[in-house]
Image (cartoon, rainbow, N blue to C red; front, side):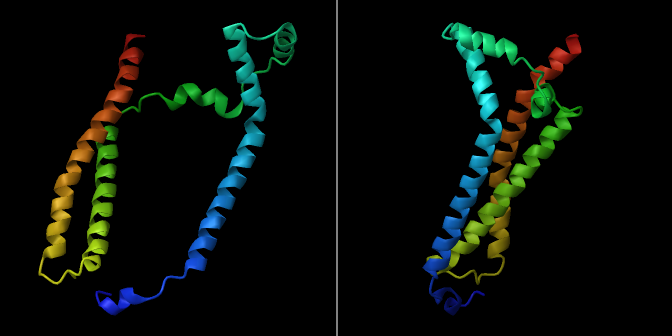
Amino acid sequence: YLDHEFFKHPIHWFSVFNSFMMVLFLMGLVALILLRTLKKDYARYGLVQDLEDGDADDNEKEALHHDKVEDSGWKQVHGDVFRAPEFLPVFAALVGTGWQLVVLTLGVIIYAVLGPLHGAVHEERGEVMQAILICYALSSIVSGFMSGKFFKEYFPTITRRGNQ
């Protein structure tokens, strides 16, 4: 696979375009389904916002009071979604480690792909291993940042829970 003849195959532009159009079509289909499903919620929450701003007329107020229903489904779990996990420090460390592995993998893949593009095929002994170690060391910055960000985001919910 390191042979230069491997990279000289013609690109099938029709297949690339066809795949791109298929992705656009599927994204549009998902967006259409979501919009049709959530249309009532958008209207109701927009009406509540109008009531808070004082822009709604009397007919809209009566319709809102007549249409008063309990929230169901995903709207009931909104309080549980943003609650801190039980072992927050351990979970934050695992989130940071996951980000480090993702950045490490992407860095090594980019290094491997860019080598043949500028004419240097990775033939030196230990060159790829050295790239992996350097990417691992540099990706630790991302790991620390993401762990700290996650911990900082959920730590106030622990202190609120402890005061109750």
